[in-house]
Image 1 (spheres, helix red, strand yellow):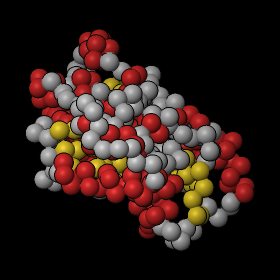
Image 2 (spheres, rainbow, N blue to C red):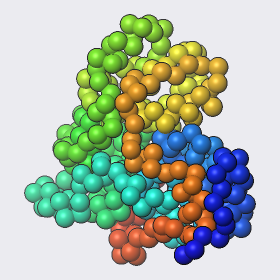
Image 3 (cartoon, rainbow, N blue to C red):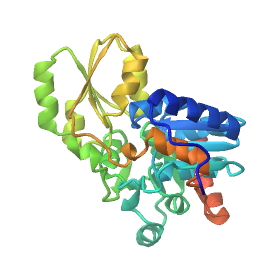
Length: 310
């Protein structure tokens, strides 16, 4: 489709154009905590993937522009099937979510009869459809503990599974997947920064490796990191997750200092979204993300079971 306006190059003009089109399209813009700072600043809501999808479902928007990666837009499409969900870059995928396919999950479950499957929200819709219940990094332990069985298949992140295992007596059967971005957080980085900033609190994502988590004060998802930054009396934090969150943390607690555990912790997929692509998504209504009804019905059940866990 031909775009409806001449190219806009100045950032201020670009933002104004996006905001005008957003109103015309009755759209809401969501941005994950790992998005570039200028994309976060244009969004109506910034947060983690499930939080954003639930916020969008509660609005009266007709269009959802999800600035994140593919599985996140899928989740929004499943929770808001009556709305148009757009992902500004169709190539914005997630290597972790690609570590498990529906066929692989069916095969593994056949080897483990009677063992429930818990899938991290960082999975494709068709994988969620093959699992009993979904989880986030924040509620993974509560979800596992809510199940009556003593053994649980946990996918796709082996590091998150290992962390959950330290929090529960149940036997966690891990999937061999991993987030490559969080592998850039290394124990030697944490040790060096602790020496340099002995007063700092260390918070890392549970997708980090066990040796990194063992050196941290807190293993938290992005939402938990933001709450800790606001509420902790600490003035300095070492942050072991994707560097995009530093922008959000600095806005939430401008009087505090946030130090990335490594400048290499950059997710290239998250950084595929730009203001220009947000504009083009609104102009051309691209790229629409949909989930087949049969898969959606089963995947949403796994999400709803998670939401029922208290």
